[in-house]
Image 1 (spheres, rainbow, N blue to C red):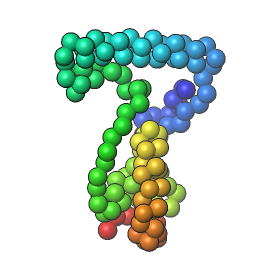
Image 2: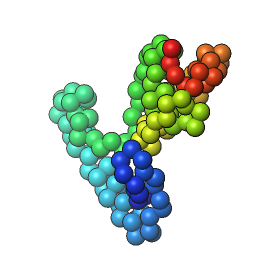
Image 3: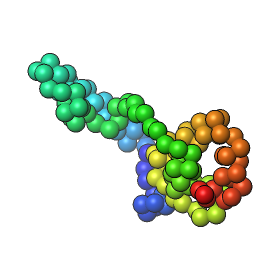
Image 4: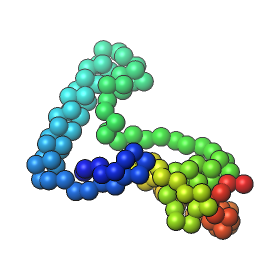
Length: 125
């Protein structure tokens, strides 16, 4: 809950119960208020693409991503923190989590390519 360190090289440490309660209450309040405003905009004929700009980032989002394996390896080399990387990176925690899921799918569908990527120090060709 509490960020310790400088941007790009930080860790999260647990906060107090009071910090957790404040955070949870304010996130809930903001999300409900924003969702209500979003619904009002839709009911008044405003396009979804415009109306969703009032929604906070903590609401679930869905996206479709398309890229070739080489582009994916480049993304993974920059956004996955790995002790086996020839060139270490320090991605933000959130993008590292997403990139780890991408890598799981990559390994499932392209096991030999993913193995070569690992053997090459996680450097894209």
